[in-house]
Length: 391
Image (cartoon, rainbow, N blue to C red):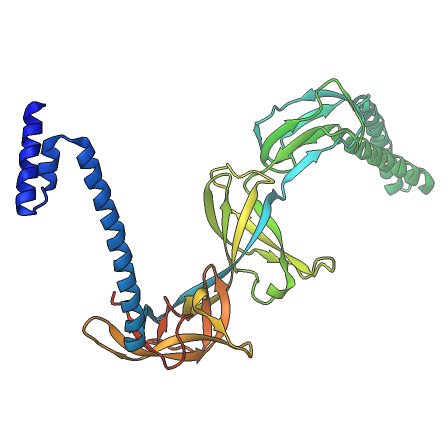
């Protein structure tokens, strides 16, 4: 400590004699934190003063440079491109083959032959209801029908031989045909006791267990679903009726699955709903993986407009005059300079088309190759000199 004090005194004497301040390294070498902190404060104050002076100079230079050489802007050269416009709607997935089977005949549900999650084929037996003795009645009627047939055949042979009366022949024939019709009617009743699959699909739910009493058209038995023929039914505002038709391309997104599929409009309604002025469209959904379920939410992007040579510009550069006309600023008479390109700002009236996100189509007023002002577009005026940032 004593050595450091001697060193500091020596530096002070040298400084006093030569009017030379010690360097930062020399101050640090003394180890005197009080002196070092004072030096730090001095430097910070000098830094603030310098920053203030620099800002003042920059402000002056920028202001006077703009007056002399023009405002500093950025431009973009117009090019044509393929433009697909989409309207976004939301819908739910559905299937035409999603039904709950009801019994056609009342009685006790004696057998259920399937379980939930099981795949079944069209016509496959799913359940059976007690027939209440119909099968036995049919067997008895068949015996009677056989007797009626024998009697009819004998009467027919006799009648062909001109033996017996015509009335006996006709009565025998009527009795036999009546028995046949009665058997067919009972067989149709018996068929109603067997519940079969109306289409191929998956058993989604066995609602009523066997042993329960069921009523025709009242008791839900089994829900069967086919997940192959999936579709989305969505209502579209009527102003798109001419642009959305059968075959229109659609991008279908499923947020919950994190996937999307491409499809096309399969059917459009011929009816306008007077309540909300909309019409329905139907969009098929490919469900090869089987993970798309009925009532799943879907976001639709429907391609209602396409242009092969569209001119698109940012919405932010468009302004409007006192007459309500839309215009943009373009850079005319473009010239190369030492540091910046220079040009003259010109106002160009435009007609806009369909917007998409932060861009919009220009239908008239611009041509391929025009240089539109992007950054600084709202700060320049007609015939003003401008400087252009080089890319």
